[in-house]
Image 1 (cartoon, rainbow over the protein chains, first blue to last red):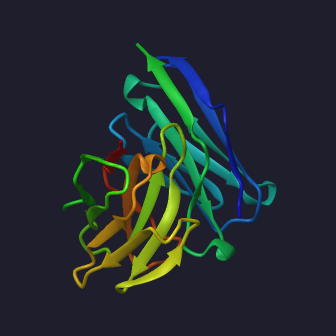
Image 2: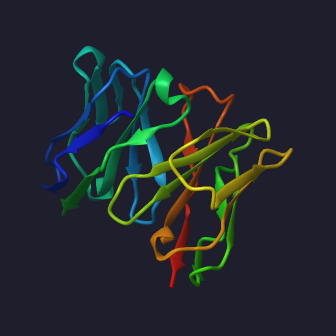
Length: 110
Length: 114
């Protein structure tokens, strides 16, 4: 199956700082989603981005499918951005299954 | 608009027992997927239900079974519980079973096996 690696595994930021989270995957994909998991466990969908670039407020994401990686940018971070960020991918071989990476644990300090 | 709802939110079971977790999908969604998330790891796909049938299954033993009802709600059953089954169980819903559709997760059911 597809292997998904996220980096860095842990990240501590001062409020207001910018950050870039990376997701590498081992096979071609037609489905890539970024999620934020809050401290209570709920996963919130941030982006569906199998290719190209999208922006939503202070967050943006870019996927370079040909090079098998995706980046999530967080600008002007806030304490509410804390939590775990997951990248999840899928392709035709995987059917409807999403394979998640190990996540990046982000802590934003006031 | 109600999102994905799961019950119970927390439960404790003894090894060897059986557990049933429940999920109601987001309004208008017809596809339900279940994931297991062990502490400190990413979620792992258990199976997906669409049109009341198991459409796809991940690498989980037969002790894990499920069901989807005509109203699209779903249950996850785990028999002969092991300590290693302790995890957060997440339900996700989507529309049409299309892999490209955005999926929405519930808040999960925290299962502790003692």
